[in-house]
Length: 264
Length: 299
Image (cartoon, rainbow over all chains, first blue to last red; front, top):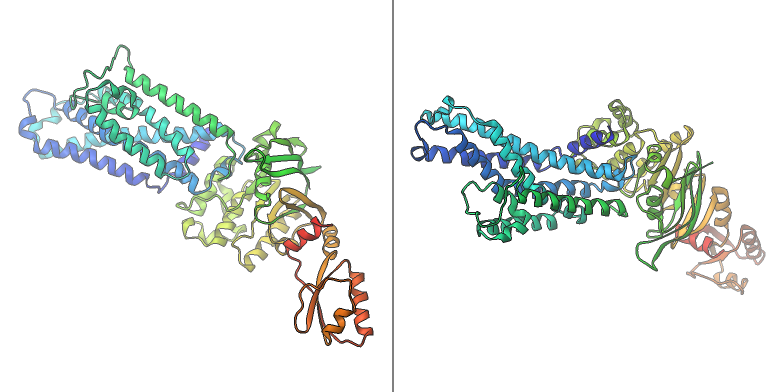
């Protein structure tokens, strides 16, 4: 019960924080791209007798995974932890009758939940945008077909797992540095590097967790066949690497947090 | 039983740089304990150790008779704290800040209104904390520390940023809490601000406890090495009457010197008057904390 109350406290702290602007910006970007791409490319896209939903939903998921997910996670985690540093909140929350690990995990879980929820909201808004496109351009015939919801949420789950490594690294960095500039700058820089690496078609991308969402949700935007992605099980090797990076950095951050002398 | 007891505590951030050197102190249950020391003397570090925010390299911290290492973190449900400035989420309202703190301590939402009334912030409950004055922030910090009705209250420099009215209001609140049987441990670097509230005092100097005892014992210490100012009609003749005393601050018609006790002062005055010299003023030089330290450390 205590951890649930701690998570609830974390969500209260996120109220009015820049996170809401980030969520709205992310939603707007994805929906605007989906909308305008559909609107302007109608003559090339409409194929008689073919379900138009997968094309739109996959495009939305790819845009979200490649361009939105990492910058959002980097900025959200950096500012989310900074809220605590700015309030000099550690000396208060670590002097409450809660073990440090519980406070640590409640913060991490709240970040994981918000990032997951953002994905869900983006997917929901993609449906809404698609219906708007259908109202304006009935030739798409979205209303005559059903979207494959299971497939799209499956795709999102893979994208989400592939970003866990980045979440682990950013959470670790945000806890180590009091300001948000260092973790945020590092994250943004690594996002750019990761993006470039993921387009080079080189196995180097396998060593860059910041490339993983791009690799997992490639969808023919880039040629990644030679990168070395294997998908023998439900999870690809890239997703497994992401999980390992996540567990390593979260474990390290937890150990340091448990031993920390709280001065802030 | 002591609410807090420290035994032979050593603490250093780096090797060979002791911040706290063999500190021992006892805060009796139900007392208002003033923990005094200059800035950088080790007050906040000591309070952080008591709260378990830092771990000593050596020694034992006990709370209500139990070693805090054995009871951590459960014992903290009986402790309210405000270390240095209050921990406040400035983008949120006073109510939200209390709600957050309440979640960590398992406090019901209906406790928020009464505590806001106690610290006189009920009219600002929906205002964002970033728009609060320093005094309001301190009062909100106090409300957060008090919200879960703790048995022990630890306040680090609680009068910081408070105006005289705020200090008086804080004193009143602390007296009320003390009457309810709560133990209050508060630190300050200004003796005059706490001497009217506390009944027991600990003085820390360069990481060592220089004095610990009751306020009356401290008053006795204060009267030792008392520095006084004398304004007289004939300065040169007066100074010649005390050839063995060091004249500290000689002005046109006054001089300052240090006396060992009040008896010595009476004898001095008598001697000056007997020599037909008029005395216009005898006044003690304000006994600030620095002088107190000198008095206590050099005893």
